[in-house]
Image 1 (cartoon, rainbow over the protein chains, first blue to last red):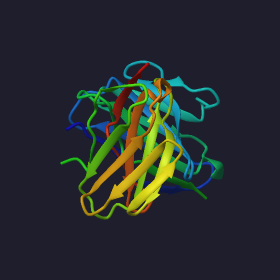
Image 2: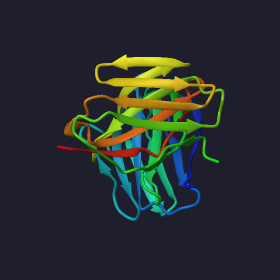
Image 3: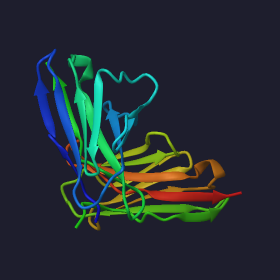
Length: 114
Length: 110
């Protein structure tokens, strides 16, 4: 079945540094991937829609210069949190529309900025 | 084998029907079980959250977890057209890493 691999699963970084999160579709081509953020025990918040070969579409209130999204191939989308601050600490999840219907989610990345 | 299996549907029911949505899983270490509802072009919203086995009720929604069968369910009573959405199950061992079902698309017809 459709599998989305997300790495790293956990990362700790210093304030001011940048962190890249990868989301890879392993056995299917994903023209569109979605990036979500989740605060503890709250709903997933859609941050942006990543389209292969074009600029990502960001949801209202999400800083596109802070959360850089690159979807350079049909199997890889990356989210880079630039100049990270402690308030960026959160759980980030990607998903892709599955060929068999529905969505396939990555397992998430726990980002802690210290 | 995927960690979490969920029938993508679509599931079409008449208004007022009782809806049953289900997920099965393979990892017996899962302890946290969640149901999300996602409307088109929106992020999923958390509907129900259950720890370990048992039932949890919230209004028209009831979540059930059967750890012995590795099976979870979400029941919607008196379904409404506004319940039409995609429903996702998710589960975790320690609330750090989540495994999602692929979502079931529900259509409640007036």
